[in-house]
Image (cartoon, rainbow, N blue to C red; front, side, top):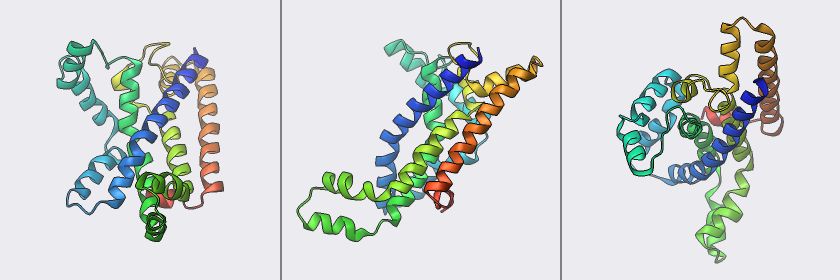
Length: 223
């Protein structure tokens, strides 16, 4: 049961991090380049999960994605997709909840990148896409590393949001953090200690990697 929960947890973290990369990179780049008056509003929405209690965020997701919710009803009627109490729902919730951990480091990395790199590339006849993938993105590797590691680690440690959306279904939505909580409730302290120690060692290793390879990792988050 414990290994099953760990497998679900790491699978969720891998999928979530991959989706966040696809979503977060262009969003962070757009925010870094934007001078729109809407920029502070969008940044606030993206950053909101950092300060909003997970249960509050999970509650509103539950209302939106439930069968009677506006999004949930449409998904179920149109595609027969049910997000609540499903692994797919955990992925959607995790992407929303961990979004700032991907976007903020990347946005700071793009903003701190000297504009002369892009200008020089364009002057040499490179296209915008070539400049982005061959010049700008490779030059923010520390920020990219920070974003990926923190997004992955944050998803591993989720509790409130995944509990509200996924519930506690063994082999389906029961992640490691919920398994620890359940073990403590049942006074199965050996299992709780084992899972907690694994998560503690993993979290320590993740933070060590961030500080070892990117000394400005958490400074980026608190720009």
